[in-house]
Length: 496
Image 1 (tube, rainbow, N blue to C red):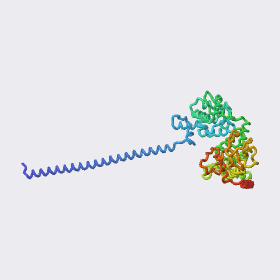
Image 2 (spheres, one colour; image 1 turned 45 degrees about the horizontal axis):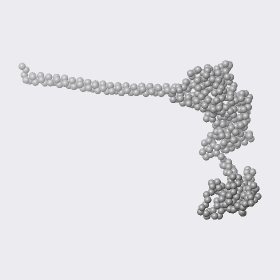
Image 3 (cartoon, rainbow, N blue to C red; image 1 turned 180 degrees about the horizontal axis):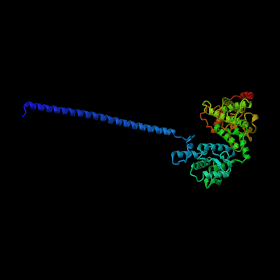
Image 4 (cartoon, one colour; image 1 turned 120 degrees about the vertical axis):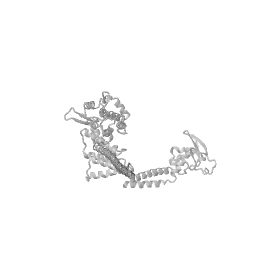
């Protein structure tokens, strides 16, 4: 049996061993905790790295997509209708808008089929066709191609209407429009509707009566329809050339009531139509006709601008080209159109002064005439006394100045009927009285009229006559004064 000392030693050794083991265990726990923290930190960092990589990848993908979009080729077009020649989706919102644009009238002024208006109609059809893409590849219906000749030839149906053979139009329509499901067929449908809606009622009736001239396989063909419309308005060949040239001489009348933009379109249409017949007017003739027209527009300032320009041109100080003159007309019109101080069509100060003087002259002439016709014996009923104020002016009305008729003497207030009209003897006119259409108590010359309480009610006609006569002569100048003023005005006009 061991001694107590030995037992204590053994116990201490055991405690030391356990303490060593505990220290080892604690160290292991500490080490494992550190490793765990490191693992957690590594896991967090990995997750963050993954998120950053994912975001970078997304950003790169977006950048690539934007870059690809920027590099995509865009079809240039002047308006949405011409952005594509693909078939129009008539159920889509944009497709409906394109259809509405296509079927709209070429101009608010309906075409009546008269030769003098054909070029205005022609110019507006051409403008509409360009805007709607009716000349564009894929949707072309107005550039008629003739492949039967070598080299092939293309006709503009609008300006070469009578040059293109009918068979060429029919072959073109059969190959590109009739029975097709393409943009050209859609354009044809819209163009036909637009052309019909641009005609007045009589012209529509004429076209409906000649339906065979513009249909193929029971389908209306726009170029054939246009050709038929023009054929009912123009004379063929030389006759039409003469009509076109004559219309240049009539431009000075055509411009009246027109804005310059519309007028210039008309002039360009005339010139283009002449060219279609193989004729070209000399530049000098074109300039002279256009200058003459520009001097007769609705705007005085515009007219004066081109009067001065014509003087310089006639003196040889400047040269003018026809196309440049059209551009000048457009520029001057635009300038005048937006002039806030003096809008288009406003009269010049000189014109306003002339109008005012003319109005004054007319008033003076009227007043002078009234003064000359005013009776000398009093001015009660001037309407009745006109041209009868003196014996020399009585003539056929001399009976009105005598109260003795058929041996019977009438007194004041007596009434007679002559020519279905009532007359009363009124002593308040002239020396001895006069037959008048009013009663003596109603006479404006009656001294007691204003003091009479029971004043008779005058008829509307008598009131109107008296008031008008009084107002007209109240401040009127004498005949001599009026004639003097008129004489002065006439002298001033002669000096100018």
